[in-house]
Image 1 (cartoon, rainbow over the protein chains, first blue to last red):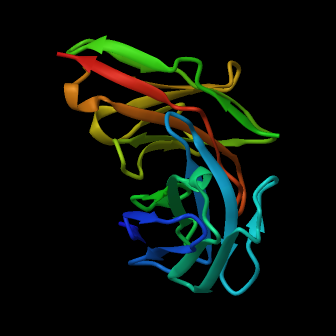
Image 2 (cartoon, chains in turn orange, yellow; image 1 turned 30 degrees about the horizontal axis):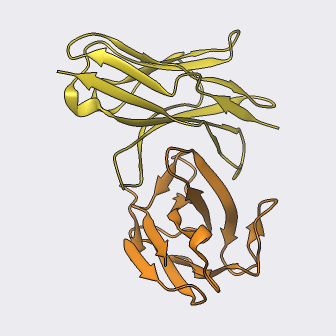
Image 3 (tube, rainbow over the protein chains, first blue to last red; image 1 turned 120 degrees about the vertical axis):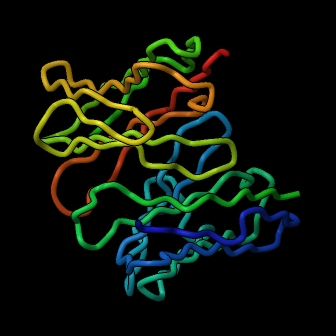
Length: 117
Length: 114
């Protein structure tokens, strides 16, 4: 099956610092990855679509300078939360489509719990 | 714009009883429909999907869902609930063709009572 990993699973950082979250497709190459944010007891909010070798496409209302996305290879996308504030605390989840298109569903990482103090 | 509605924040069902988690959708063209399950502090796990073909779709862990085009619904069902089914369930939709953005519902918490 298609496996997506995230690292770290949990991170605590101080206000004003930056934190990087990695999303890897372990057994397939993903030209497109997605970054979601999930608030407690809420649905997933798509933040951006990460495209290998090109700029990410951000959803309306998402600050691209604050949430930096880099999709440097076919198996790795990173989300960097810059100058983090307590309101950035959330559960961040990435996902990827399998390139074969046989599988239409997205494969999700286990998520990263970010706490900004 | 596409959308998904899950009208129930929470569904309670006794163990052994049948369960239904409701979902209705709106999308341009033919829909691809999905159900995912999420356990606490975990990512989403795929349960089942409707792409084309039979309206009744069978998925993991004994779950099934029925695609109803006229009612634009895709309700999740299971004949006999288990306590271990207790989790958060998300319905999702995307338009067919290529890499299309997926829209998720707000989720329904399923509580199976022993």
